[in-house]
Image 1 (cartoon, one colour):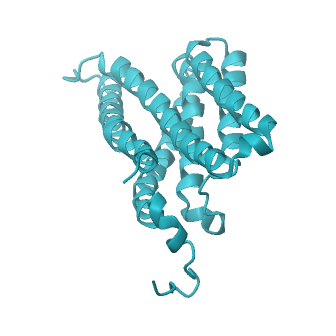
Image 2 (image 1 turned 120 degrees about the vertical axis):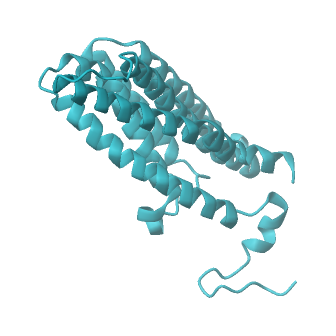
Length: 233
């Protein structure tokens, strides 16, 4: 396995080592927070410590940033591997500069989203972060599997990342809204996100089987995928 093949594994390694464990932590704390809220509302004395809500918030913010970061890493590898292989810099240097600036702008927007407090600025930076992910995802080299978009690791991953960005943007509204409408929205969207993460686990494993090592690509890509045949060596 060459260096470029190892770099391709950084995305799934970080997803397994950071994102999915954090997802378990966040779900556990979310359940405890909900149970404590119900117990207190009914007048019972809860054994769940009050700090669980704050810990859930901290873990959720870490999870959201991790998901966006891992998504950018996966996109970055695919895009820059294509740029180097196809020598895009010599053909269209403006495109390369644009891509680099988009990565910088997306990361900067995510950082500012964490720091922003007014609703307007949270909306602006969330929009910029989401737009950056979508624009980068349309670049050449990204393995999108558009013909099966409903079962594509890329499309499911982008959807999950956008939900995480939205969750970051509405955190302040959840705690300010006494009607709990934003909390309900948060619960529904993040329940959908959990299903998307499960899909990511399955489609990511499938894609690791389908994407060959760098030295295998010339032979593998000469195969007839429709008829499931390969030329005899």
